[in-house]
Length: 106
Ligand SMILES: [Ca+2]
Image (cartoon, rainbow, N blue to C red; front, side, top):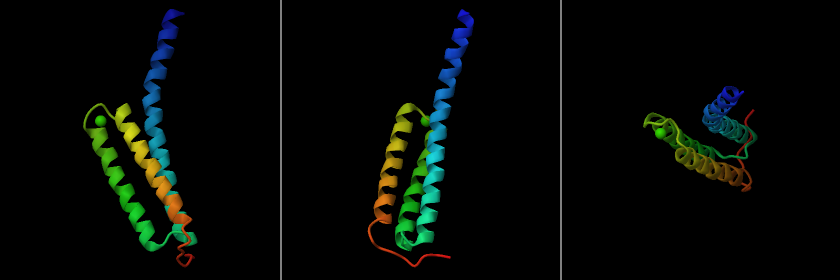
């Protein structure tokens, strides 16, 4: 029984960071889809989309570096990344609702 509990705790501990990394990946994909959707609807102008994409690219580079520099993505690294994802997400929302419109793409 005791060994079973120890195993369960161990599995949970190992799974948690992976799940957190997964969340960053999922948000990355969602963000991408939102940019694409914004361009198609015309809610994002070409300039706005390009600027947000550049921010995404910069963040993706940071994520790759953080993963490589040892310890995988540490809690501190993940927190920083998620904060930047929050900022980009907010920017994306603002730009989509600032009334500047491009012609919708077919
Ligand atoms: Ca790291």
